[in-house]
Length: 252
Image 1 (tube, rainbow, N blue to C red):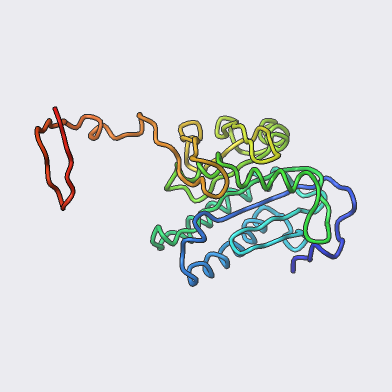
Image 2: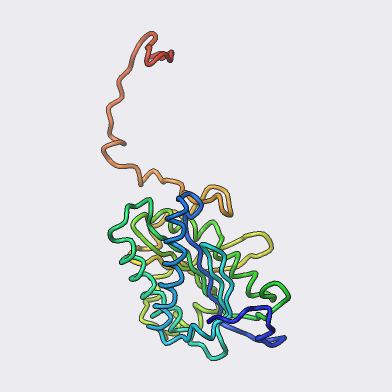
């Protein structure tokens, strides 16, 4: 069983590997679906941890319905979390969603960071827990998932994790599978790297509308408009047209 963060299990100072996940659209589904998604998050995270050789029993975790935040123990493998864990999590999400209607899909945002974290009276304290929260809730990560409707997962890793783990070839990823973006959320500002399984992150439109939890939709580019619509013939009308009680004045 995961240990409670209020028991002081972490030392006053320590650098740890951090993971955060959050479900997209959780608040818009019914209670039964919410219950199913909550159970799936816990199960899929545990399966992915087992596949990656990351002892879930030793994680210090905070869960809140559709989200999970974890501080992994000292010595936890960064390459295993970034690579094997995330690939297994994506495969599990796809299997879970396979026979479900799109409205009931479980789609996750995830973030990975490495930095200082320790237990406080009501959760974790330190710079890293704040930073990973901003990464997870950032407009760019939300937009990445919104811009890839067939994807089940969008991952953001901090620069320190990308530079030390991905760039140095400690994973099976190619560097170009990630996209560098700037995140500025509240008091946090920094570079993060985005990966969306099965997608070219450089082709995604990450210009979200607004920021924070309301920024779920990406902004369409002209190039995203289907050719059939761009080439539609426009008819010119003269006079007034009545349609369903509404009157539109259209002039040549």
